[in-house]
Image (tube, rainbow over all chains, first blue to last red; front, side, top):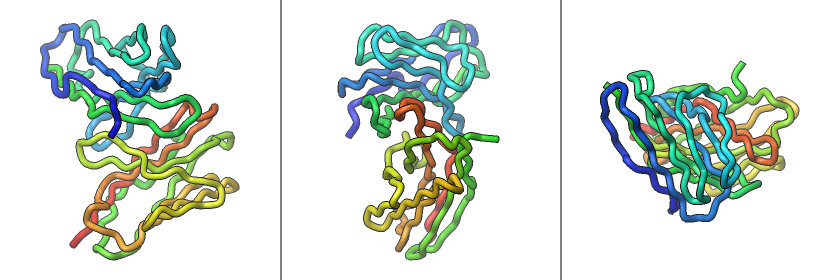
Amino acid sequence: EADIYQTPRYLVIGTGKKITLECSQTMGHDKMYWYQQDPGMELHLIHYSYGVNSTEKGDLSSESTVSRIRTEHFPLTLESARPSHTSQYLCASKLAGTGELFFGEGSRLTVL
Amino acid sequence: RKEVEQDPGPFNVPEGATVAFNCTYSNSASQSFFWYRQDCRKEPKLLMSVYSSGNEDGRFTAQLNRASQYISLLIRDSKLSDSATYLCVVGSFGNEKLTFGTGTRLTIIP
């Protein structure tokens, strides 16, 4: 089983609130990713990191931000949540050069 | 045009049948290819890598056709537990960029 954890699993909040989705992995992976996936739809890469202090925007524009201060931790923050941010957010990690992504169980966000 | 294209299905197949689906990719410089499986409301997990010579893992066979830029997945003797969405994934730049297809939904019918 993959050692990558996301919290919270489910979150329902009101518009305008600031939220942080946590993601931690204990596998020592240097590459970490955030994907967004709506029900029945494809995964879209929104952020990734090649290592500590490295963050890049993905293919899908997102109003969220990320940070990578420690290897094992890659939190995603929304400063002011809106209903359009309602989605599932999946965190993943992998070793450099390999193709196997290990995903967390996801954080389902609903913004009212 | 999407980088990775798959027929979304759904494919409804009787138990025990053989089912195959394809995926096409647009970037000829793509270097690596994978099939992931995603169960309903769960996270994706690696099913198998796809090698140039084709490879088999039990009832699953994956093929790569670089000239036509497509990969395929064949499932033999399908089982109820094979019901899931199968995601085609293409890697480039040393696997640092993995692009997911929309997935093909498969339902095995008893």
